[in-house]
Image 1 (cartoon, rainbow, N blue to C red):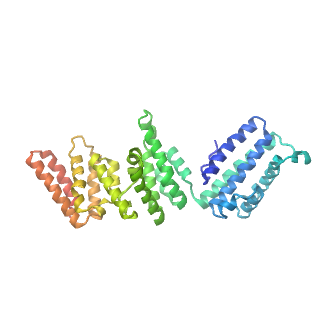
Image 2: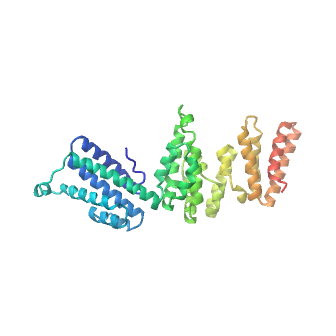
Image 3: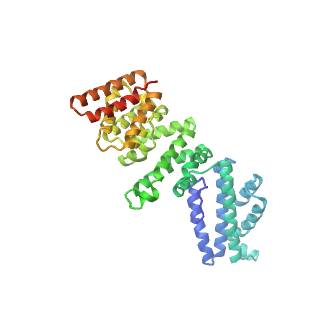
Length: 374
């Protein structure tokens, strides 16, 4: 089916998808007059969506435009070609057949050929508007989500797509479509086919979210950070433990008010107490700027326990070490580093007294990540 993912208004998109299906059914069932009327309705809605997206006129005014006026506006603005405009004018005339008595007065009828031409014109308009949207408005949230879902190599061009996306669509991506897509992927993980066919999706969704956040303006960053805090305060464990943590970075707290930042930090520390994994380590990024002396044991002890587990994966251990290196270089204060090193020495001495020498090397590796020689 033809994709309407370039349509920015969600109500329009839902209606257009339905009308397009009905137009095809009408042609198949020889309801040619209905098909032409629907074709005109589709073209009108697509053009109105475009003028709203580009802020040519206010949404309230745009919704009052009739077919002829929006057609003239789009022709004058070079949104559609003169040829397409002329063809659309013909559809406009046929669309008026819906008015009582017109087909009798003008002796006009609609046949299969007219309906097929109308359908072809709809597709021409869709292609022209989609092209204009990409050039002027940028990509929609739906187009980016669609690209991620069907292209396993989309990560290589993700930043280019996001740079071509405006702030409105970035907001829709971060606060609606990426979370929905992540939850949807999470629901598939236990399926036997998931690992081979869809396992690349969730990491790309996370990367996409963080790229969107990087390109968001300050107002959108604050709005998104406030949204994170709201998720932690109000949403279910399922939501929080999925995209609520996967998309969050501790560095986002600088865009929150003081109370929200305290709640988010407490939640993150609670998460590492219960389970240290790759997602939690990513979420900890930037926590060093907000770590106080009261946090040291709460923060460091779960990391020590994690690396000293006999079955810890090498990748996770390396991620913990890399995380401490970055925080030590960029975020930990001198006092914080001294307190962390002191706590790690306590762990080292404890293992030494218990004769658990296999763990001492692990702790020394953490010490080296914090106590950098430069």
